Length: 181
Image (cartoon, rainbow, N blue to C red):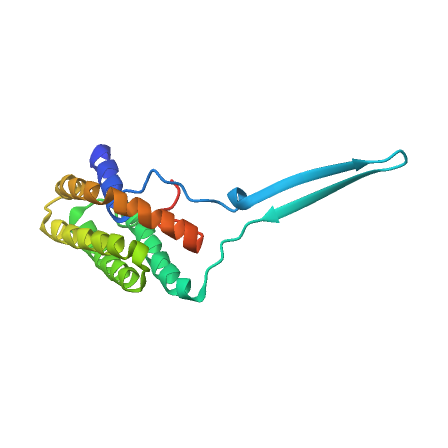
């Protein structure tokens, strides 16, 4: 086992299903808080008052479907990113597990594209098509290195779409499709 191919495959897998949005960061609860302090002083007493304002992401009823679908996408991305930790690096063991995860990823992206608003519908469909190509690459691969090389080249094609979907998810649903790394 070589450490470099494992790093490459983990990066390729995460990049592919994470839709090349690895450089974006999600917002934490701390990011959404704005804390201000006001101190009032009189000759006889000192009073300190703290006011905390929290901006919450609100979703409308129509957002529930897309947010649920994007949560499924995010969950699949986490599964892919931890696959070598859970299943090891032996290709004969890892490959069928990855095929299963990628096929569930196809389902998740199909559902997301079907319920998506117009602003991200095409992006999700493009990403879904890219993941479908990666399933074929995965099925044809003879080793981790072979898969990593081929899927990495394919992942670069969806960087813009990935970024838009990740930002949409953060803005609309309150979570990124790609976890912070």
